[in-house]
Image (cartoon, rainbow, N blue to C red; front, side):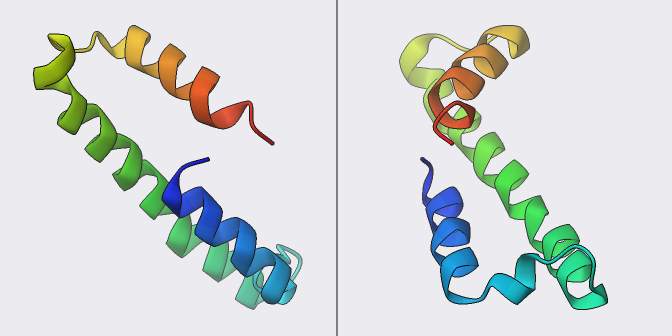
Length: 72
């Protein structure tokens, strides 16, 4: 689990109303803060490039999904 995913997981336990997409508050919260997951993902890709010789987009997507999306 990435750091941002962990924050969202903890926050969902503490403030579940923020993740209620049936409310305006919930939809706005999820929509606004979902962008940080993509920012974190791009930072991971950018930071790892010099060390692994660069990522092909498909390779990075596969690695990211296998590493972070299958943990739920």
